[in-house]
Length: 83
Length: 274
Image 1 (tube, rainbow over the protein chains, first blue to last red):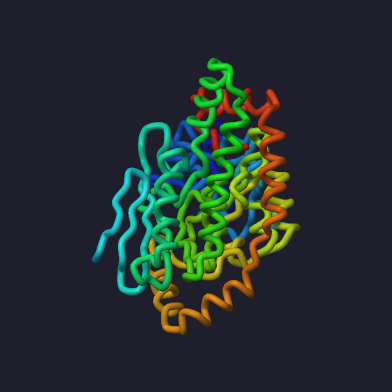
Image 2 (image 1 turned 60 degrees about the horizontal axis):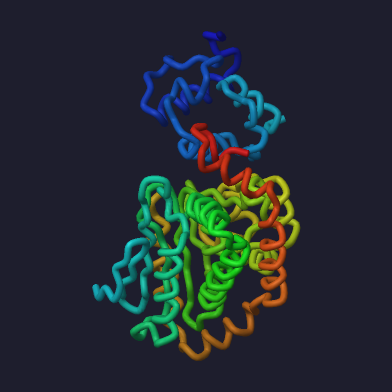
């Protein structure tokens, strides 16, 4: 899968997730499965969503997360909201 | 600190002029204050205590000591198990659900209209019935981790603890429709922008700030505060009754049992996502 962030947005997102869940900086990749890589449950995912929304100043409805499994997918949702 | 009650799901104690109610139900299968029969019984006890004068308290503060959040709503596992058991016994499930709704509405209406000032300090999960409990309060203080959601349509239901009429009264029907028809959750910042949340605070600080709100409210004349509340916060009784009717009508649908079965038996790590 994608090993290198393709945008500053992806880099910031990976940094946020790594810091939140105690992963080494640079250990996460855009194509990683969020739940599998972080080992989190739905509540922790929701908590991360709140941090993403607050950090980037966007609102991402939960239903847009349906089928989104990777950090790259989340980054794309954020990008669309940022315009 | 005087502790008039310590229960299985909640406790309350006097702190100055405030009665502080702490939700603390966290058991396997119900890890965020899910509201079932025991919680309802203990809330009924609280309401009786309020009606008896609440030991002279001037305000009531609701908070949760469960890290995951304020309250995840109704105990769906118990609801499903009850539904299956009653069917096996030949009892129409809707009759018992109706009785439960009548009791929870009586409790929530009493909390909504108590002459004491009520403050909710919320964090994390504020979903379904937990959201509806917060909506009975006069003021909601939220920390930045809070998320508010009406997930009931995912189960083939509408919210049944009075949330729709109260949210419409307090914020507006457009917000109700957005949350109800999409099942999405709102973060605390957005809820603050909408006016649902009165004060937005740092993670872990909602209880402290809510306590200050309660102390401030207690500085005014009790009768004047009570009269102001009765005037400013009318109970949407007719709408609340229609909500119960709608919930019970939907409850008989096979969609509900299938959705509850899926929720209870799911091993998916993402059951809260639509």
